[in-house]
Amino acid sequence: MMEGQQTVSYLEPNNDEASHTNLNMECGDKAIIKDSIGSFTKSVQNESLCQCKEKHTTESDNEAILETLPWSGLHSYTRQDDSAVKEWVLHKEKPSEEDSWHLLDLEQSLPQPAMYSEFLWRDWENLCETEDISDKQFDFSVLSYNILSQDLADQNPELYQHCDPSILHWDYRWPNILQELQHWEADIICLQEVQQDHYKEHVEPSLSAIGYSCHFKRRTGRKTDGCCTCYKTQRFMLLSESHVEFFRPGIDVLNRDNVGLVLLLKPLLPDAQQGRHNPIPLCVANTHLLYNPRRGDIKLAQLALLLAEVDKISLTAHGSHYPVILCGDLNATPDSPLYHLLRYGYLNYRGMPSWKVSGQEQYCTLSNPRILPPLLWPDYLGVTDNCQYAKLHKPKNLDKPIYTRQQLLELRYCECALQRPPHLVFIKGVTDNEPDDFAKASHPVSPTNFPESPSTFLRLPFTLRHSLHLKSAYSHFLPSKGCAEVTTLPMGIGSTVDYIFYSVESSAQGKSRQVIPVHRDSQLKLLGHLRLLCEDDLWVAQGLPNPFCCSDHLCLLARFSMDLTTP
Image 1: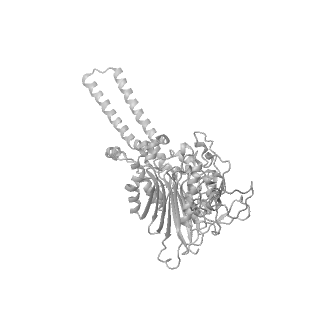
Image 2 (image 1 turned 90 degrees about the vertical axis):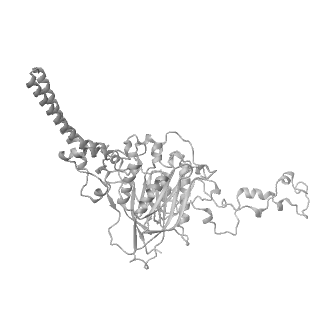
């Protein structure tokens, strides 16, 4: 642990100096005793000299060891001239030998700050040409961060055996996480795994004090954590807030306690732009999907329900959508079918095993032969295969009633079908005077009394779609290092499961459904993002969490520009 090493580097010279002083006193005392009594033999003198030589050798060895201690190497990895490092790195210079005696007790009583490691240095990457600031655009930044619930960390200690226990305490982690949030100063912050008591006692008071409005949704059931979305009150105004609970009684694929949070925000323009432009609202969604790698069916159902809510909140009066930002820990990799659905708006899952949905096969400890069914959820949920609420997207031909198979079967025994027309000619073997006994025993049903059911919409088996046109703010690959980006290290394996998606405009051409759509910027334009790290970088810095990054996930940060000229 860097913290412990730094303390050793401060205290070791003092211990050597004390040993050297005691050594001189020991040799001097023995010389005085020899002169006064004359009882020391030559062997005793040689033993004393050997002891002195051994201790002097130990002193020189310690000095050599001090030169190789990690604290000196960390100095070379510290960018002292960078303002970012100066803000969140609390590093002290090595005290002189004269002052070290006065600082001895203080060093032992106060915790040592973690020094910054160059291996965790993250550069900002601009993704568009530098342009002059225009009054026709509204720039803002979005940060997404899974900050690791303390209860979950305590319940799963086997995941953090590589960590020093002291850096897992919330009292150590939260000040560093807050310092990181303050440093990046994002206009919108989406947090996952926020513990409810910590939200009330630390997160909400701390962020409110620096100008954020915080909104929290706890997971259902006995779960103590949830999602938190914050925005700067000087930059946005809240128009609506929607809490999404993925637990639905009686539905097998919606029996978990995960949640989502969807806000509709209106940008607040500076005084120079007010009156000249009317900015369109921005829809911000935040979620944390189920982790279980074997239950991809649940993840797809949760995502579909979230997309239906986003579609509802972002829907305009003209049938289009406001710009969308979707953040969160999706517990799915960039090469997974779930990611494909989000990115390209289409997924055919015929014959797909449930454990393949999230791309986390290496984390499956038990085989699961579950194959995804043709329809993932029942009709009465009211969500179509287009990930939309059926009530919001009813068919245009409302004059033509649509009957389900069950309703058509019930029509056989309605009252009008059970009554024999009075002038019907009796033909033996063809018509009877009365209906059969089975028809008599049935309960008459009126065709006009069918209850309204959301099942009166067509569904395509093995198919999921959505029309939000989303794109990731990250490419999930580091060209400079030739390896994949990493946001977390589950079970010691680097993986990307955290995302910032934003809405773009589809420009796909062609009649085939299999054509992968091409997207271009619409109301939102991605300006840049904070680069991620690779797996090797994180392990050099002792994995996650470590003294510098106090969560088991890295934060994501992206900057966007909203076109104010778009109607």
